[in-house]
Image (cartoon, rainbow, N blue to C red; front, side, top):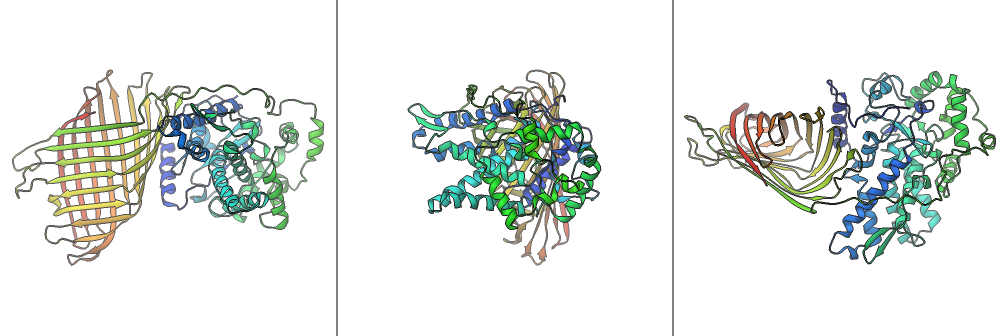
Length: 638
């Protein structure tokens, strides 16, 4: 039995952090709302992880109950339709392109996984079915998912995202088709065809070179779950005088089957990928096909009962026979080994009297799950205001106003039902930045300003309350930055992006978590960029290629309130456009670096000293302008 590992393994070489940053960059730059990942269940055949059925049942039911609790807290909850509530349930498992439950399952210490966190890098490089000698396999930039067990079935965390995300897309398409008058059977066929198209496109062949039949099964079973929420016969969701209620608990055994396991429901591959995979199958697994471990693995699945609704499985076989999807049998372990597949009916007959199929107790009364508690108000404003500065002879930097304001809606509780807490919120508005006020030699009263405005941000955080490890990922809509840099001969500047991605990975060390370190990355997509000069009103207008900001820091807690912190960061923002001042086509770039020392004396106040260097490169005018800034003062938070 494998030992459970902490939520994150923080290493000096920060390999996991680099992987997360690379994933964030790829996630932000590639089109589409979903990202393809792959999994390798062959590796887990002779080292099965402990079954996580109870843990995953508890997780899903608490998320459903959390969605209902938030709906029922609203003043007009009774005006919500069942489909409105179902959409709230869906939002619990996904946030702005991020598969929350997949992240949770990959990192929760309550989920036993193969390989473990400690061994995952070595597994990808030396034991994975998808290992290869390429310098960079961009299709697998998100890595190979680990395997865990649910109701006796091996599956990867990617099946959770297919179940809850693609299943929701199936559900929405199905409702649209039915409203258009499409017969039910034809509507279901269209759903499976749509799933096959995604596997032939951005979720499969085009990106990873893999067509996953197991993903199609997870998609369809997720659709059945969402359909069960509001179906007329026996809906899971019911409106009562006291609010919306869950009539029966979610149970993975209603949906999981061996079709989630890619050692049974194997994938198909593009030629280059299949050449690599076939080589590893022949070398690593063909010599073990007749071993008792492998025989028992397939014997167990042969005895596993069929799902009540196996429409997807039957229709996919029809598509294979018609030649509309790849011939699955050509890419199986048996095909790679030059063997015929086992006689599964005979294997099932051999175990007809055995127990342990992973489905026992399905008809028994499901456990009662406790609804999450919401101790905080839905709307909680946060306001920070700081003042201070430094004045020397000839210096214009003699006063500072530092402000940060945000209003957010908390949509996930921060209780301690598990060692892993998943706070998450919608940031409605945030203004964060610096203003330096005073008189410069030219008599200008605002010599420096750097303000960042975020209208909307969806943020997801994954925390381990026991170890202090945390991962935070956010998606920002329309991030905007305003600057005024007199020393750089630029009276005003503006940057506005379409979307941005924020990522943060941190760790507190020690029994009482007195020492903490973190690293973060912010990446904004292309947008609008302008820089105005005193000499002409429209010096530059063009496109902001991207803004990349990196920050790292450490903190030391010396008591319940006293805290010392050090933050280092940098930023680069290239642009492309036209310089109206005579420079023609130009590609100006904003550069910045800073270091800030912090001392928290109370929970409401912070002293800080900040040194930063701002630079502005203008190829059109052939100049690089820079100015140092030294700021110091106190911040008060409310």
